[in-house]
Length: 326
Image 1 (cartoon, rainbow, N blue to C red):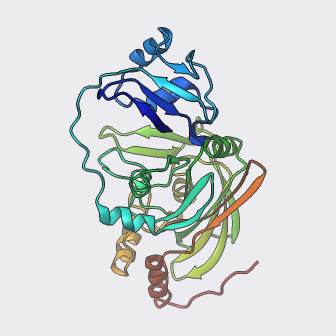
Image 2 (cartoon, helix red, strand yellow; image 1 turned 180 degrees about the vertical axis):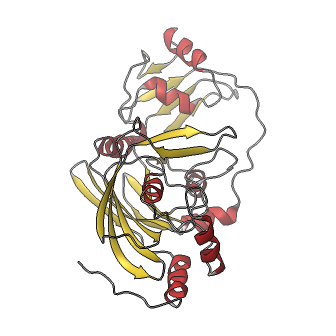
C-alpha cells in the first residue's frame, strides 16, 4: 500500500492507495495489518460506523479490495510502544545475499541453518523480519516455514495473488518438496515409503513434540537413497504430506533418525558425529516446485558447505559405497 495524502496531524485521516499485495484481500484483514496494535473490536467498530471508506463509499468487513482502490482510514490512537531497534545490519545484509530467485510474485532464498523462518518464542528476528528490513519498500509475506536448524529453499510472496495462489497449492498438496537428509544406520531398502499418522503435543515446558499416533493426521514420506557412508545414508526425502517435523519423526519411527537431531535423534550417534564436525541437524530443503497463475516454478538449493565438509570427513571413517543413480 502507498499513502497518497495525509493530514498534518499525527493521527489524522489517511488516504491509502491499494497495491498489488492487497488485491482481493478482505478489508478487515487488511486493516488488522495496517493498524497494528489496534484492537479487533475497534477495527470492526470503525467499519460498522462507516468511518472506513473505499473509493468514497462505506465499506463492510467482507468488502474485497482491488489494486488501485483508494482507502480512507480515520484517525486512530494507538498506545505508544517502545521503539523497535530492528535486526542487526550484518544479519540483514547476509540474508539479502541468499536470494536465488525473484519475480513480481515471489522472492526465494536459500535459508541458512540457525535462522528461524519468523520471530517469536525467544527469537527476535527470523527470515521474514530480516527480508523486510532488507527491502523496506516491498510487501513480503512468509508462505511456508522451515525449522530453524533446517537450511534450504524458503519462499516469500510479494503479492496477494502469489500468497493465496501458493497457499492454495500447498493445501491441495500439489507442491513438490524434496529434502536431503542423513539417516543414522543402514535402512534395509534403497527406496521405501513411511506412511504413519502424526500427532502434535506440547510438553509441560512449552516444547513442541510430534509423535506417531493412531489418532494423528495422515502423513506420508518417500525416501530414496542417494549415497552410502560408514554408519549412515544420505537420503532424498519427498513429502507426500506436509506435517510438522514429518521427515524427522518418520526417520525416528523406522529406527534411523536424522544425524544431528537433538530432539528425535540418537544421542550417542550425535555425539560421535559432532566430534567429526556436524554441528547441526542434517536436513536441507533442496528442491521445491509448483504452479501458480499458469506459470510453473522450480527452485533448487545445493547442499551447504558445512554439510559437504562433514560428509567428506565421514567418508574417511571407512569404505564408502557407490553413488546410486537409479
